Length: 130
Image: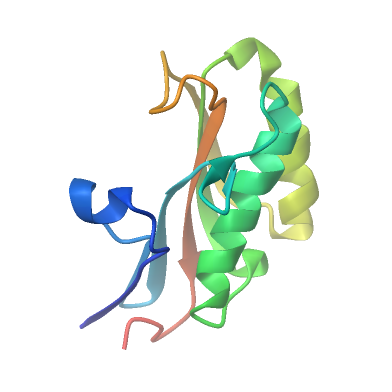
């Protein structure tokens, strides 16, 4: 059994995905970018965009009653790997002692050329998927 949530973003039904899916003992959060209210925020600011993307991850987890402390894995897709410290500092500040396994992957572009980072996450909580 799985449980799914939507962020009500207009592109979810077009692409065919859920913001997050709880299955078994895990919650898988789709890639989140620096959007708030349907608009890109922190244009040009790698750290600010990472903070907002992680806040969007946290918002999805909260709908399952979880927090960033439950995250065991993240992936950061970044458009400029040379700015790794900016992305990394924001990630470190958000996850603190949770210290999930992570990867930072340089990509050519994201769906909007102003987007600098996309963050996906996996959280663990026994029985969360129903």
